[in-house]
Image (cartoon, rainbow, N blue to C red):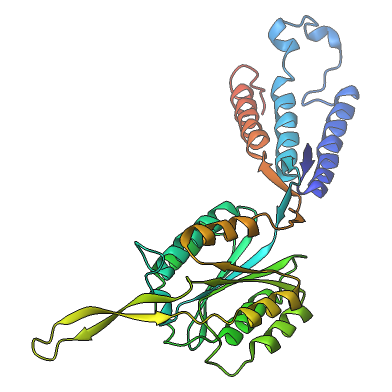
Length: 335
């Protein structure tokens, strides 16, 4: 589609047309530089070159009109069709407390396996916005909700066990995640909470935080990770004799508050899942991957190409040609 960016400049064409009209009027009245008592004193014969004597003036008029068109800024507009995307806003709240270092998801610990599987989940959700919160004794937003998969994956890869203290503030994690989603305009907003413990830190009760999520229409899917029974947990200690840092293993028994996690999910319209190994955790995330999706319409856009350079360039060429021909082939004396 073609349009003019500054169409009001076309009014200048009236001045060009008026000038042409005045010149034609003068020539029809036969105004000239000399007056003769009789036309017989001059030859009425006209050569071919004389018949084309109006070319410089015609080129000048064309040049002026082209410059007027250039000032009106002709544009080529390409409208980009609106596309419908289907997606939701998701915040992944990942427990980074010390117990997530337990190695019952061998050959790696719970935290590293959870990071890998969450990364795979993120890579599949191409039409969603993703945010990441990690929590221990406190909850921290690592990635605000974004479409940028590369940044989200990079920051997730750098997350470490114990970076937020050795505790489990589930209520604070939910509240922080809700805060990230409360201004979202998506009709579907989801929190995926991954933890292996019970709420033992923070000043926010998990059920109070869940009621806040329900108030904002945020759905929470809770995942309790860890196998049942005693599990090996590596602990770094300094050797009192050599001063070297050594890794020793102790065994801990997982304590997952499944009742509270299930209630949190139920209050918000989500579901609770238990993942006792890496394969089960992967299956849970794949199931969540099949969540209902909300239709999001991308706004219509248009691409505008400025075309004023073409009439401007040809207008200058016409002006130069008019001046050149007027001073050579059709030189008038007196000028």
